[in-house]
Amino acid sequence: MKITLSVIKADIGGWPGHSRVHPDCIEVARKNLEKAKKKGVIIDYSVLAAGDDLQLIMTHKKGVDARDIHKLAWDTFELAAKKAKELHLYGAGQDLLSNAFSGNVRGMGPGVAEMEFEERKSEPVIVFMADKTEAGAWNLPLFRMFADPFNTAGLVIDPEMHGGFVFEVQDVIKHRKVKFSTPEEVYDLLAFIGAPSRYVIKRVYNKKGEIAAVTSTEKLNFIAGKYVGKDDPVMVVRAQHGLPAVGEVMEPFAFPHMVSGWMRGSHHGPMMPVAFEDAHPTRFDGPPRVIAAGFQIANGKLIGPVDMFKDPSFDRARQMANEVADYIRRHGPFEPHRLPLDEMEYTTLPSVEKKLEKRFEKI
Ligand code: 13P
Ligand code: 13P
Ligand code: MG
Ligand code: MG
Image (cartoon, rainbow, N blue to C red):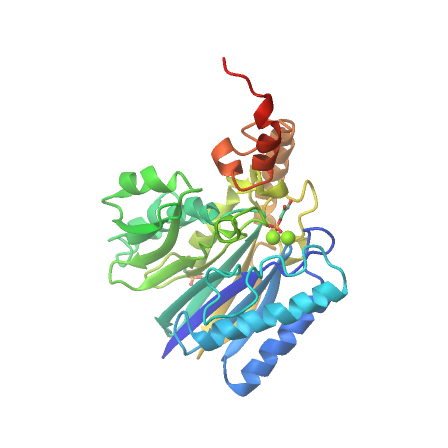
């Protein structure tokens, strides 16, 4: 049976500031998706929150970019934003950048990661959800999962994985995409994805062309034309049986790599893997966080979520993230804690520059 897994997310208001989603908003979203499930629009759903981002995880048979599903997500965000407005939550409706739905939420503010696939006899998937960072934050962990034998033993010892994987990379500035086949083109791939603010892994396929992973790549500041919040991306990864094992999918997050985002979307900081209950960034609005929800899919039903980072084996990563956070925070407003100028272009910095423009003299 072909099913579609759609993860659509938006910041509909923070409680307080940008730290988390209010439980009343989660409840509103659950009720609306329950209604849609009863009507048969979706097979199943799970509503979660990563920091101040509301996460709608849905299964259905309508394929990717389906109008019904995007409309359902949009309506759900609007209902939750209405609740957020009642509670005067911060930035209520933050990511709902358009006021009229036109068939698809892409380009309207929400982030989208969807994949359609033939459900296997056993279908483990992990949904990763981040707050206070950008889409390119998945580049390093995805590379590790699907191309690095020091992370993924299966690349060496599983004959089904030995052939490698294909990475689809998007250039989010020039709006073009390119595919790299690994292991043959690992160095070419790295030349691009090592610049995660511009080159973002959108999808990973096995060499039979079957989808293995998909990310959300929406760039909020490009849509809004100014800084309104970070992209706070999501990623779906299928596991086992010719794909990385669940543990190989999780392993990259034992290293809290440096990502951009954090305070005002303008700082580098470590990505801290946390349990659902710890996904509310409060220190300097961070540090950036990731949660992982594990599911088995059974005839489209979502058996889960399992809180995958609620595991003491990620304690060290959390500790290291705190140490790195202490270290880099001491740079205050200096790079490389603060993002380089070209990435600050969409924050409030341009208005500061404009104000001081006339005081600059030629040298
Ligand atoms: P089991 O032997 O527990 O099924 O594990 C196999 C495996 O793939 C572990 O990564
Ligand atoms: P969000 O993108 O999570 O709303 O965070 C915005 C921000 O400015 C945090 O300091
Ligand atoms: Mg916010
Ligand atoms: Mg957020």
